[in-house]
Length: 157
Image (tube, rainbow, N blue to C red; front, top):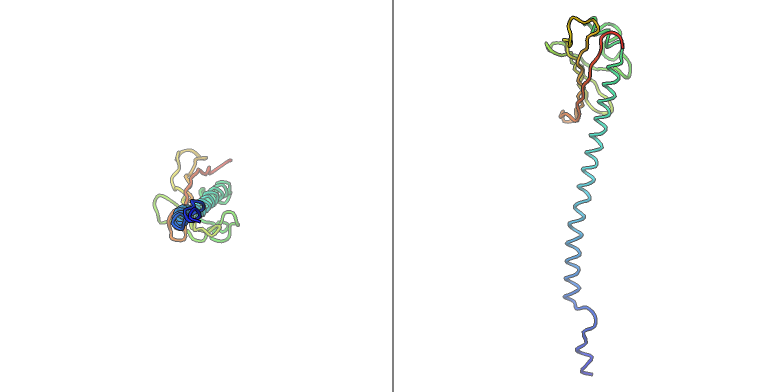
């Protein structure tokens, strides 16, 4: 009977506790990784949506005949007043007091949008000269999420 008490078969309580502690440490470090990845994925998704929205607005404004007519006449006419243009070229507010840019504000896809069109052209003597347009997407805190630019040709396509 003496031989049965000194058997080395099986695990001791200390070995079981140590293995549980090691396993829990490994799980705790890897589990904190997944919420961070979810947060980073959400930020990347928001950034991608903002970039796509900025590109859509830039394309809409560059292709609009009403915007081109506005740049020729330099005054918002009855067909280019706030809320009357169309769903693609839409603005809520404008400010022409800046000496460098025409400033327009709007919203699209739950983002605040600033659109700036440079008042002076690249070549002042050319009738088909181009104006710089800058589209800036802001988050709810007013910080820029995306910014893109392009050029609007006053006449022709």
